[in-house]
Image (cartoon, rainbow, N blue to C red; front, side, top):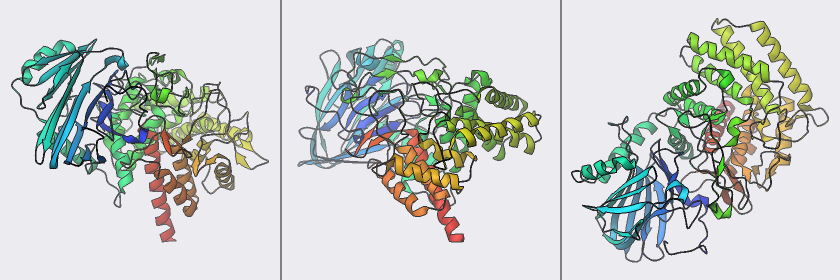
Length: 612
């Protein structure tokens, strides 16, 4: 692959698998190539990045010589350990990929990608190519050989320590190459460990006295993931897809701070060749609260606690300083820049890092914060005075802002509007504030809060409702449809079986359905180019239809949407029903969250039907 040029097309997004240690992340292709890897943090500059430029980005390949034979893959049960099998004329091997996890050393992160090849039958000749490229492909690191098959790659502020028992050699000053033969029962190992450049000499010296730990690391990593997945509790056995989605959500958490990222990639396009390419390696409050809610339903309370602390720290305990998104370390300034030297996935450019949406006004964030507080308190946890002062500030800030236009849940860059979903979330913020104060006898200006809550409802029911069609609409100043309206019953503004909601759901099915999946909206959004269907919206429709008792169409949409996952159970953000291919950043946390909640809604509907 190292000598192949641009006539090679980029693999489909569905060809990739995620591995993670809740700090770093990597995407491994179906054919054993690490084409995206960010270390030591998920938002770090890539070390391997040919996902965004096939020639410049760099990669790490372990694959059979020749056409690669037949490849199949799976995750080991309950884990994020990837197993890829290659079957050739000469034999069969399996390749394990994982980031090292250790139940006995949780506080000391290793930032170590393990690759372990094991012979199953016969013998297979494998090629190994390690071509790191730092700073999104801009820096070719200096590769140096040390004793005992230890190598270092250093450039700028990045360093990789590469250890192996394979016969590799430095090639062209920047790369490693070699060929190995793996026979039945044999194992070969490659470890890629992140180290700051100034610590590489000490790390090299340390490695001369340590054995390769890939074998023991595999067992410890499987044990770590199984311990977490076994902590999931639900009244009945969780189906395989929902379990995989839960593990993916855990993989998208940044363990050190509690942040939860939207996706581990940047600039995978919403449509091939278009400019709708965004960096999703940040923690959106909205998406994170959705994730916390789903994990809470599954009994995973620690993630909720951790994220709540992250939000309070990042906002400095002040709703006036609350942003819609943060860096994984709580950083507020997420300046957006274009990486002009990269061609982008399938020539979709610009490639962006950072995200301008961090400075947008999105009013729904206040409702999400208040709902999280409600679930926190009703789950048996106390709200101390400091936290209550923050919540009062959130409600008061909502009151000050609810009449303003905002950019909405879809982060429109074509100008703010009076989005109905945003207004409904403002209503939700007031509603949860009132409920918390009433139930738990907290001091609050309740008369004022109740008055504003009523004012918001009146505004939505008058300006956000089309009397002629009898449906809710996207925004006060237009009559377009929007799939975010499907969330109104979950917010509590309207019952799922309210005639207005029934008609709204029917209209969305008629107007936004594209190949059995939903588009986000039918309005212009100020951006050039098209986009695929937005997979979370279809799952929102499933939840809404199930709550309305329309179980048969709900299951039909559910099966259509789950059919958009790859064979590993991973979802992208968007999908092209006509070409039957994934679009957008991958894997997308919001899609996995929405799948879990849709399945739970279907199960509740089934139990309710059985009781009737």
